[in-house]
Amino acid sequence: MAKKSLIERELKREKLAAKYAAKYAELKAIANDAKRPDGERDAARLGLQKLPRNANPTRQRNRCEMTGRPRGTFRQFGLGRAKVREMAFAGDIPGVTKASW
Image 1 (cartoon, rainbow, N blue to C red):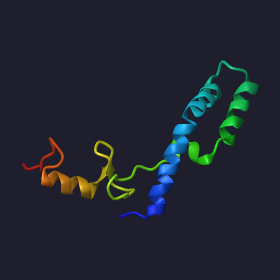
Image 2: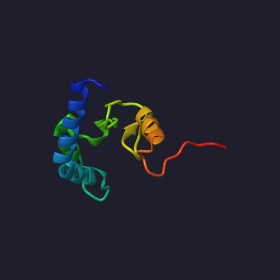
Image 3: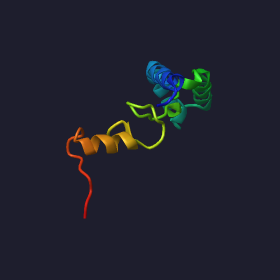
């Protein structure tokens, strides 16, 4: 089980990223638009820098929903590898079976 503080930090990052998502996308589009004047693009880049650091979606980490484990997380299930294995063997994940050949 991950530390409670690390799980809470990730939740805080998700909330901040959601709060600033529209502004972030707008400034990013202006900064990447080659047809706009350089001054406007520079102002957009400065605006991106002024946003909170944790508002950047790339700072988020995928974690297991049950244990909070940061590594070995399956995006399809939102679970860590150990929990996927455990739940698949128990038959709790529909359509997932143990491979045999």
